[in-house]
Image (cartoon, rainbow, N blue to C red; front, side):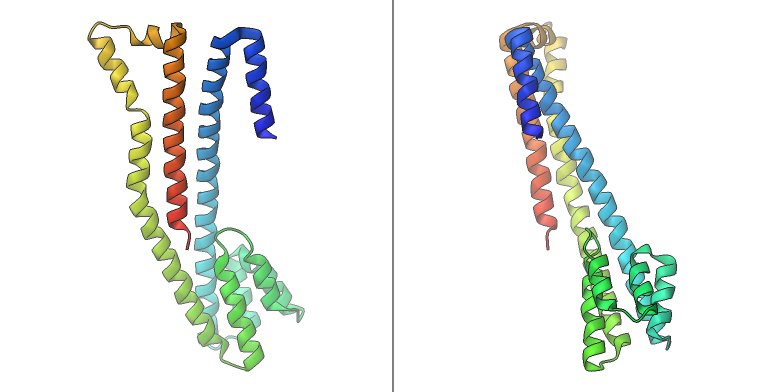
Length: 223
């Protein structure tokens, strides 16, 4: 749908304003797409981090309560009081439902994968009679370790990502230097067709570089 909309905008620009209008439309679409993509990815990443922190805390609370001798329903209720992700499991436990299934369903969202591990541990304890306290403690340690590793990867990737975004604006330095040396790079880029073609190509390459770097960073974060 988005591709059809972009093609439609470019077609209208070409018909109404000619080649110059088409080039400006391409430029605007490239900048808008890149900015929108980066913004949406940043929001999704923030939601994932918050969910991961919530799950890690919930697993820690459940494991701690069970180690202190609390019954499973009490442990889940205590975790649900601090973490929304445990509300379904706590409610299911109170009515005698399938807690493992409730945890799996709650763990379907990004950043909540730890709840799936907790569900496996819970089901293993119910099926074999193994102490749930020890199993949930292992899950809690695993979730915290995975979260720490992900944070380390994010910290290591922040430098290259910042560098890529900075390099995208590096051509502006060339424009300033050209202006300082007595030339008119702005006029060439904005008011001539060859200059506008160069501007569009440069912006497209810069946007592609930023998006490529972001994609590599996402690939590096995958387990």
